[in-house]
Image 1 (tube, rainbow, N blue to C red):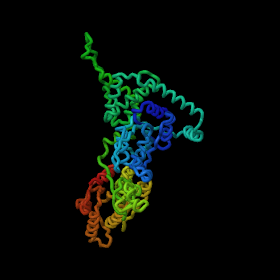
Image 2: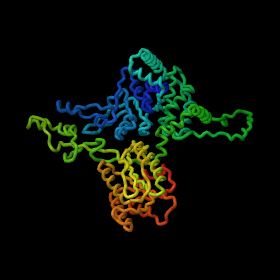
Image 3: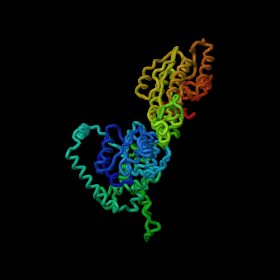
Image 4: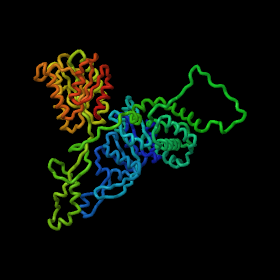
Amino acid sequence: MDTPRLALLMLALEPRLRGCVFVGPPGSGKSALMHGFADLLPGIQQVALPLGCDQEALLGGLDLEATLQRGERVIRNGVLSRAHGGVLLVEACNLLAEGTTNTLLGALEDGELRIERDGLSRRVPTRFRLLASYDPAEGQPRAHLLDRMGLIVRMPAAATHDARLSIVDRHLNPAHRAWQDEIEMLRGVLELARASLDDVEMTAAQQEELCASAVALGVQGHRADLFASLAARASAALALRDRVQREDLELAVRLVLLPRATRNPAQEEPAPNEAPPPPQESPEPNTADAPGPEMDSLEMAEEILEAVDTELPAVLDALPFSRSRRSRAGSRGSTAGTRGRHVASVPGTLKGQRLDVIATLRAAAPWQRLRTRRHGNLTLRAEDIRIKRYKSKAGALFIFAVDASGSMALNRMRQAKGAVHSLLEQAYVNRDKVALMSFRAQSADLLLPPTSSVELLRRAVDQIPTGGGTPLAATLLLTLEVAEQAKRKGYGNIVLVLLTDGRANIGLRAERAGVDQELQGIAAAVAARGLKTLLIDTQRSFVSHGAGQKLARWLGGEYLYMPSAGSAAIAHAARSAVAI
């Protein structure tokens, strides 16, 4: 835990680093470090930002009870204003609502909030240190949020016997003398470092090293350059040195630049059989021809990058900056309704709506002096009523319908299993769910209703029986039932992914000759309900009559001939169908 604790010391010493985020799995010590930060700075205020915090609690607003008692507006401070001058703690920052994240971004960037709401107009100072954490298995936070925090620390997993025993001992004996002595020592180091921080020297060549390292790693923007310089100087001050050294630069790269990397730095090496060029003699040194500081800094930057090279591949896979450059643009968007996050309160009637009691009383408060002259008590009128407006993240429902008939069934099962697993990797972030059905013989079966559990879907796929006829009409009818239930739960994006060759031979009521006509009618009903359809033809030998293409046309969907498609390609095609 030396590096995470050193990051906390650097943040305690240099507030211009703004914040530190700890990235790691459960049990890696993220929360303990965050809450222990106050021990380094006695008397500093720590304020926690709950995940379910709404705009009223975040920004503050009218204190309704005090306003009604005094007959004048009384302002209540929000979470961000209470954290001014102290520390804001945000656990699981990747799960923050989008509106909350946007407000937090503004507070970090400007150091104040301009509040214009509910008839209020004021400026609130918000200069605080931000401590955040998240588990990468639960999804990535907004890259813009991480970009505004100076230090990003990947936590080591505490899995050894001694480590787990030490954690239990620490919680059962929080006042252990050895730990108290260590805290006192760290406070003393901070005092000495704070007195010498402004005098720490950093040369222009060292600054160029950091900038060259940022370029080599593909770091976007210029905040990281400033953060890296501040971190290097803070590291030197904590080591009680008066100038920045190589180890300070390496630490700055590790905690600031490396987590923001979007690519591996290209390192060109000479061919093994290529001889080095002969030295050229120069009678007099010419400063105009001598290598400039830029070339020297590039060479020194490579040395720094080599020192942290072993960490780079894992960081690139675990952090969101590289993913943001190669991921598909766009998002699921959001939907309005009576579920999700409360975003506003508006005048309206109570029929089928939810009453916002606080907003209603707030609207009535300015008129109470006039009304109480007539009635003598609190009076509400119809124009005071405020109802809640909600917005929820609009996840997509992928309905996988797998043709379990014929000789190709086992191949389709394998493809469906991999594609479902790939889709669910990001299901938690996008609020996506996957339903699974199979069809064979005389009927279609819903093996698993909409879920985001990878394990349940894996088991369902493993247990699918195969062989028999192809009842496509029954499959589409079952799809309609599942889609109707999903729409009632707020799913606006519903994608039917059919893994089949499209050759139906079993009808609902029609005889063999009338199967196509019956199937066309049900397909038209599916298209009329607004379902997005993707038919993936997995037949190895392409059939010229094009049954799959005809069915996709009836459904108003997309047709892909992918006889040897991998699971990743199928998952990508399904995600693309959301934007059709």
